[in-house]
Every structure is written in structure tokens, then in C-alpha cells.
Image (tube, rainbow, N blue to C red; front, side, top):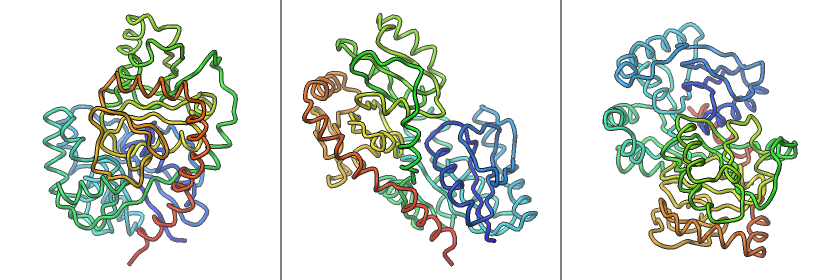
Length: 378
């Protein structure tokens, strides 16, 4: 039986982590599957037949130490490759990608790296030290991989134009639409009282939850926020300071967020920048109308696929084919979109009817086959 090997930092909550678990859970019927992690943390359910190996158990959060440990972890990966006679490694996320490529200094194998964000935006918006380090390492290492995959066309072109990566391609994130629909029917513990918006994402600066909180303040609605992150206490304090305890609910991380998505009336997304947001596809699979910022990158490619993906809104909203787009960091335009989706039942229903059509473009069966072709290509 052929082997399939994936490397990622951890399998805690996150879009790339969900993609890895989805791919492996589907591959395990045909292949001997291995998952290599760099730290403890498995949030998503994995088939018990998947073999789990560790490079490290407790990853330091200090940027300099992380940087200095790269060659050590690359050597450890090379030893695992030799021991298990792995012929390839498919890695996800910056750190795993660096280690995958660097491990070729110690043993030769096929390196397939997967970039799940828009690197130029990530490097620009991170802290100054990590931004410079990541920019340097991407330019130095990504081009040395056998193949660099991205999860969107825009991210692929960013790698090509700004980081000189030429052995590239893109595969949309594969999602198990049927599983999502099944899970979405589960009951929830939260009581729905009125028109409800829902959002899903880590509680970090780039997701800009404050934008959504401020935008819904003057409407007779509830907002469910699903996710964990370092800003949880700050956001809770912000909600209290705005007097919104009876409207905004920080529900924490949910193993089954789809049950909440399906009970809400509209998905709302306030990110300043993205890679390719899985949550928008998941919202489509749950047949939710969507309001999203037109951030780099992903929302436009997802919701307005026939438009110019290099165009971004500045001062108006757009009724795109599969959802409403708004400019980033613009509370007034977000309010305009909220008012429109709440008051126009015909528009809301029109978007709901189109959700299935778009969600089907990301079916796991379609995109898993593309991964197989890349992994086992000569």
C-alpha cells in the first residue's frame, strides 16, 4: 500500500488544520497515512488508522527560538523520513513548509508545500521581526520545493509575482459538504431569540471582530461569535463596555460549528486580510447568506468568481453573485450591508438558493483527486 505523509504544526482549530484532517480521513481508505506534528494538540477528529508522529511536543512561542530550532527540527524530520522510508512529505503552514524543504539537506525526498495564506499580506501585517524573517525564508526556501501549492488563484499569483516561486499550482480547500450538512442538523445549547448573525474565526486582530460588534450595535439582532484566541478577554470587555451583553455572545470554540451556522440567519465576516477562508465555504454549505469584507484574499474569489480578483472595494458595498462584499475596516458600509440583508427577504432567499451551487465547487471528492495527482506525479 502506498504511503501518504502530511506535516503540520498541530491539529488544533484552524482552516489549514481542518483541511489536513479532511484529506487524511479520505485518503485512509486507499493509502497508509501518516501525520507528523510539531506540537501537541488534536482538535479535529481523525480516523484511528492514521499514524501520528511527533517532531516536537511543546513548541516555544518565542520567535527567535522558533527560528533557531528550524534546522534541528529539519534534521529530526529527515531521521523520520529515513526510518519510515518516506518518499514525499506534504506540509501545510509556514513553519512546517520551512522544515520540509530544509530536511532535504539531510535526506532526499519529494517536497510538496502548501501555502494557505497570502504571504505578502501576512508578512506585512505580522510583527516586524516575524514579518521580515518569514519574507526572507519564503524567498529562500519555497522555490526549492518540488511543488508549492496554494489554496487560491490569488495566493498562487502572490507567490509567483512577489516571491519568485515558479513551481506552483493551486487547489481549493476540499470540504466534506455532505458531512457538514449532516452535522448542521444537530441541536445547539444556545437559544435563538431574534434575527441572528454568526461568525467563526480565531479571536485575533486580523479577524477584526470589533468591526462586526460595532456594526450590529444599533440593530435588533444577536451576534454569535465562535472561536478561541488571545483577544477573548479583550473582546468580552469590549462587549461589556458597549453594553451589548444581551446581543453579542462569545461562544468559544465548537467541535461542530455547523450546527450553529445552520440556526443563524446570516454569516458575517470582518477580516482585514485572509488566505482563503474556509468558513465562507462552510457557511455556503450550511445555506447561509453571507456578508464579508472584500479583503485580500479569498472572499472576492469565493463570492464573486467572475469578477477581477485583483479589485478591492474602497467606499461602497457590492451585491456579488454569492454574497455581499464590503470594504475592509468600514463600519458604515458594514451597517449598510446588515440593514439590506435584514430588510430584503427576497435578496436573502436568493442568496440561500445559490449557496448549494457554489459550495459544490469545493466538494472533497473533486479536490482530493487533485491532491492525489500531485502527490503521486512522477
